[in-house]
Image (tube, rainbow, N blue to C red; front, side, top):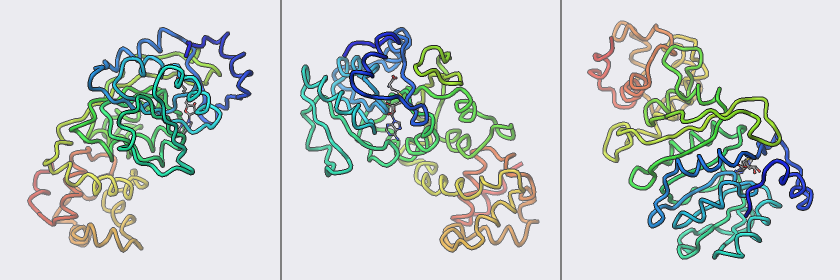
Length: 318
Ligand code: SAH
């Protein structure tokens, strides 16, 4: 697949009868240096790396990724585009196209195939086991995608993710406790991932041109994702705790937890020890502090108290 500069992209899209739609996150990279930079940052090991690319588009990044990696999965939800990718890549590689709307998915079956194109929604599709994830990801699905990555990260396999995201979104990922941007996603990322902003990318590098500045970020796993750490064992519980309380981030912790548990029988059973400190706030005076003032680690410890009832966990707060 050639690289498409802006001048080459327009006639190509016309030929394929594709109309790019910004609302569906279809802003294509038309700056070859940035594309090369992203691929370099992936640091591909050709003997071992199995790569997942999210939102491949016409293959701006995919082509070099395919050439350098051991195997690659291209996940894209636009049918015309996946057909185009298939017809091109099959000229040089062993390629399989899986349409998630009709085909059963069994990645094990295709272990000898170099390129697996998956036509489906990146949020709903099951992720194959990979060592690197790359993507100029659609902004509309950035947040659910990051939660999905955190939820499914297997530290024995996945080494890092190189993603292009909206700059404002990256700032939410790294937001400090009690800052304006501190949110559920900052509390999730903060506990589990290291995040590095590697390069700002101006909107002129894309077609159609978005209104925002983008940034390339690198995500790697923190030790908290080690298999036998408490943080890992209680990963799903922590993520569901955050989902429940963060809609109330400007309320006191006490109110946030009360609102979360109210009319939610499952949560009340799962985090059954919170009742005690809500009824007896003198056991944990910090419960009246605003939720957004609690760091990811403190929120994790609170979740652990709510689940296990070990009161000594609460004595470590200050
Ligand atoms: N990698 C290409 C394209 C990036 S644009 C480049 O850098 O030029 C993002 C791509 O993601 C588009 O092709 C769009 O069709 C696709 N996309 C949008 N929403 C998606 C979803 N929910 N699941 C999978 N792909 C999606």
